[in-house]
Length: 202
Image 1 (cartoon, one colour):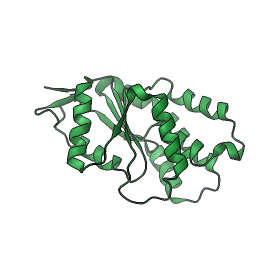
Image 2 (spheres, one colour):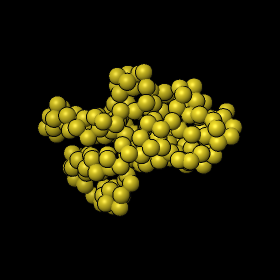
Image 3 (cartoon, helix red, strand yellow):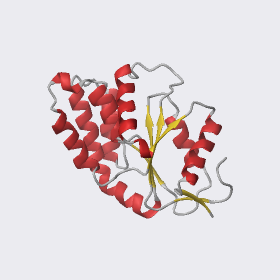
Image 4 (tube, one colour):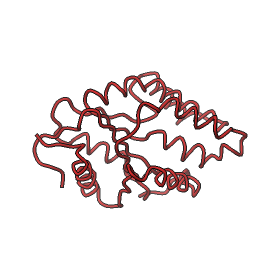
């Protein structure tokens, strides 16, 4: 169960909800937003739509307009990431930050899922670009959602392998989220945050 009373995400904390589409991330972000947060409330942001009108519009276009190039889609996403980094850094410092998706999605759905290597994309260059955007925003904790509740054609085996590889590389900060009812999942997330000193009760 989450702690009772007013809650505060430790200033400086960066928590990420990552994983497959239709696995409950957006539901949990909404539920976390509704917790009784003390001021300053944590900043919640979805990547790549971010915190600006520009990046919300770019994301809308990537979701609704045909894009023939898998690389172009990922570069548009990374442009949104880059545009938001400064604001995200400030939010993390002042009130803590909770992200719905991180650069892991770029790797899982882009590098692995779209098989960018087969399209002639250089691995070193691609990952250097990602690192140049996110190097100053490492996560304290990544909640990984890997059980979709609905079918989604984008959740291919290659994407699952990508997430599994990322979780293995970053095992110290990764928590696999068990499939459960929404309230139980929120309780699980809050208890894990509290156990790691990232969520405190006032």
